[in-house]
Image (cartoon, rainbow, N blue to C red):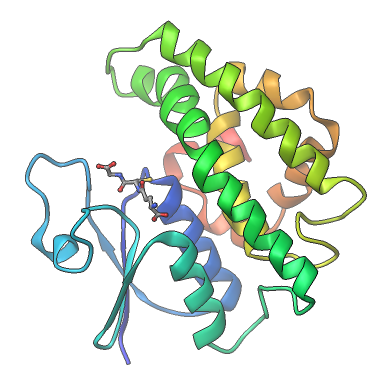
Length: 216
Ligand SMILES: N[C@@H](CCC(=O)N[C@@H](CS)C(=O)NCC(=O)O)C(=O)O
């Protein structure tokens, strides 16, 4: 059955899905689509009426929402198991993914990254107020993640999991600029978790090209 990922080169959520696919060692067709384009692509809209990436099609089966996609990738295919077997650890994994989606994406990516890295890089207007607000909102989220990583090699326990796959790209976008990096450096356990994953082959091979020299 043909597997196709609708993905955008600058999208943090697309990176998460590509990282999960790489960890499973699955080959797939990459369909590049810009969800911010003024003319939405029908191919994406027909799967996701909300016009967001990533989206996935597997034969006739279609799916959107990154956390659902990564779970499907893990459960529908052979390869490394990416979710803890113990209920407590699996719940922790899902909790971390929930925190990242609800509390980290907006300040890490849409405020700090956009106004310290992306907009300057693409000559778009920057807002120092948005950057400051993003840094302020990011701090308690980093503190929450730091508390969760306490005493563990990976975010949900001893094994690499979907929690790490969801978190690394978000942390990478936050740290792509000086302000976000300085803020994150104050969280020692999270920083050493991040440094360890920087050398992981799938992380390196899936990192968006425009960020490689800033985040790895
Ligand atoms: N809740 C969605 C969020 C996906 C998302 O926000 N993707 C961004 C790119 S990183 C997007 O497509 N944005 C288009 C827009 O906001 O119009 C998920 O988990 O997949």
